[in-house]
Image 1 (tube, rainbow, N blue to C red):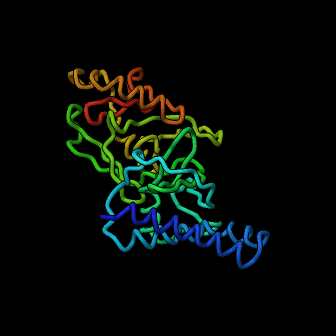
Image 2: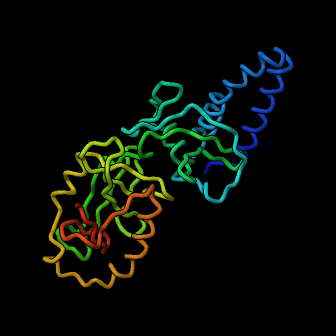
Image 3: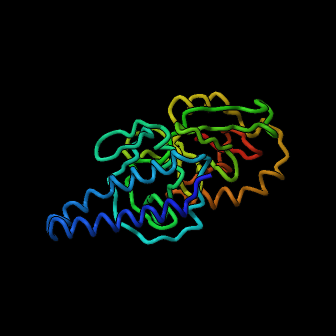
Length: 252
């Protein structure tokens, strides 16, 4: 597994050394200009350290409280692609690494290590959900819908990963379906996957499912929906929708 403490220590030491050398060798004004380019070195340091280890899954960013170290020129675009300084990050492993240390906090997105936190930009949602897998299709009580992001992370639609149908922020009339992938980080359901979900729509009144499981998780889904960028999935008030993990989600 990746040694996050070692990565953090190396990053801090390298950044401090580069700042000191820039100021000493080129003077304050030129040194400050060079310091602006250190973000690229942060990226390379993190990526090189991660690719040398056995990388698996998301890092425990919720347990870390490092100092904020400024903005970095990284953007996640609507199609799920990662960009740095106007150029796409083509190495999937690097994008997977950055996604694993991604944190959402008070409407902003950060890349986090135990020793530093930098802010990035997200055009829409940080993840794009591109693949659907269905287990126990047609059985409302046991049907489970799994969605996979373009970076390979898979979640099951349900109480912990609720589905919302919101309004598109661009102002067009298209639906804006999202799933809470983890800790407030939303995944935008791609159009092709949304069409596949539409094929699974049933009338809630026609699915005779004992509602005990759904009732037990309904408040959890409501809370998650309220906290996810203001989008609310009215899963309990519409009759047409889909079942997953014992919960009914409206596709209204």
